[in-house]
Length: 195
Image (cartoon, rainbow, N blue to C red; front, side, top):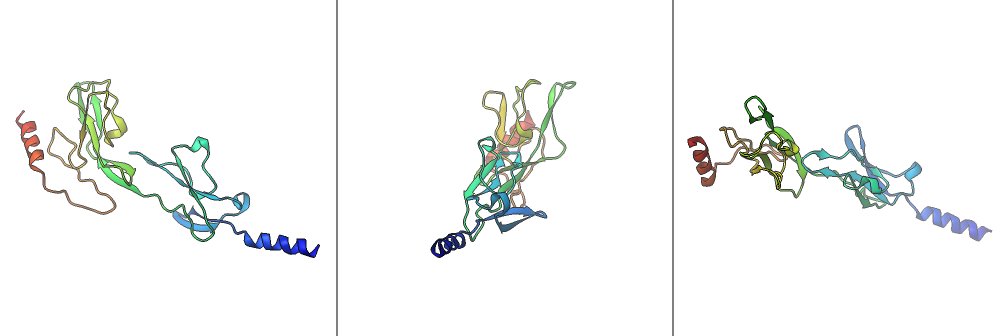
């Protein structure tokens, strides 16, 4: 009987809950999993939805489910350090376009909107092509590449306005100033404004 009791104590003392981060008052805080998740072996974090932002998945203890595919990321936890660290999101800016039925043309937004991307995603904006009509579905408010099966034009995030002299330099994490225009960009501008 004493041997069984000692064995049970050894087993219970050898197990410790894993550490996972959770969001507390707007900041990530690591803590041992407890309650219904005290036996969890995985930690969760949100996924970056390309050109939209972070998913609504919470940082915490537990595993992703099949229904969470594409919106949840899981990592194998341990007893000392939370594996679900802050998800890196690149932010940049692109102009949006809406179709003006009166003038029968696409109008550009007065200000550039916010875009989000994964850390390894190339920054890109898109705009309606010259042949795009009112039926064209403008993707992601100008964030990311254009549609390959519809009339569209991709644009470098630093210059996605083909019809007016306004430029947006995309800022990722730190402020930056617009770089000098390349020779090809200057040639493009001269062709646009001479048309």
